Image (tube, rainbow, N blue to C red; front, top):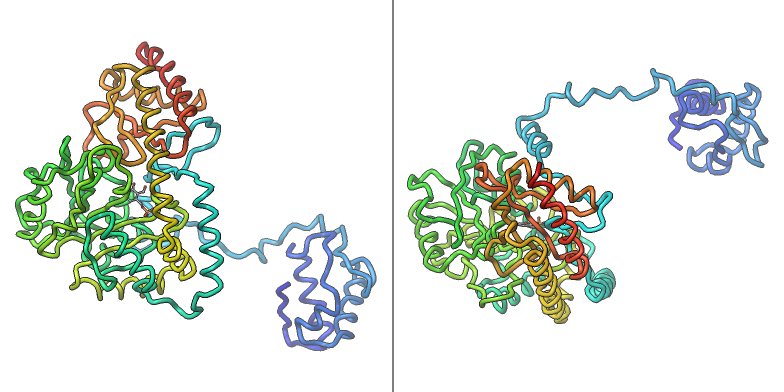
Length: 485
Ligand SMILES: Cc1ncc(COP(=O)(O)O)c(C=O)c1O
């Protein structure tokens, strides 16, 4: 209990006054037990007799019941007293606080953010981004954490990331993504979101131009918009970003692209366009952030090597995340930076958070080094392949040509266009499905320009095949009804 003595008069009266104040302003509720006099004397560095005398004084005033030594309780009468207005801390209402420009923008983009997880009342939630649960991974992770906790250094970690994790990241990237990086090029970050925030801090001033694909990941738009970037977009088609439609002037400072699996359409940027994009960036001295958020999971053709692996001019900042391949609660990811940017990013990281948490970094290095991570990736890819096939099969079977799935063979979500549905009917479909316990989500919030036709962004990582089939059956039951609406 926090008690402030006022240094006025005998100590037992000072203590009695402080306790009385705590009782009257409601910090000690009626009927609650007061601290033992022995505890009080130790905490306040007073003699026990002083504490006993203070309690006796309060008992005389009728504020407490009981006997010092066998437990004292706040008298019930105090129940009639409300916490006094004078004692309540003076809260300035949020709207009356003058925030910084950035603070205001952050609030605005957050207010308009796509709502968080929406499980309530849902039997089947096809929300994008829900992680796949995997008991084998959970147990491997637990033992890696235990091992890491036993050995980790307790001082501040290297802000660039634990060297052993950076080594593992480089080996993994060489094996799986064709990227030749040295541990010194790698910065460990708290997920992609922090990579975006650091890039905004290091590379953009308010008013600078940022280019996003359209549609795009709203997490990127928000973080750059909050920092005052002027956002432009460029359309995508079945081959990914339409590089010919990029602005020709040299005013774009930074562009965020998802070449391996365009978010959310799923298109893969063709090799000629990759080369063209790198040329475009080099000629305009524009930085490219390659967001390789789910590059691991492909189910058809061989994956194209990462854009970073083709980058001879050092314009690409590669960003990988463990959110999809392990789980988002981990909040760990990495950047592979052009050498000239490394020190500025490490400084920004140090100033922001003094480095990512060392125990998790160390556990992750152990998990990757032991081979458990890649075993998990192989299992996860098989599980996802089966889930995806179940979802696509169910859509074909139950929804027929009311739904047109965008061509893609990777990731943990699909984009399903509704070619014969108006935007209002699509919203009605979402509402009707929700009333039947199925969570489906429109793609519109991810688009900058209004869409010609509505579409659904459906995540399938979290649901087994039978659930996906049941969900689609329920969803399909709504289709004829909304057609009449
Ligand atoms: C396009 C895209 N990039 C990156 C991420 C990962 O973000 P983070 O690493 O901050 O969890 C996601 C997660 O949903 C995503 O959809």
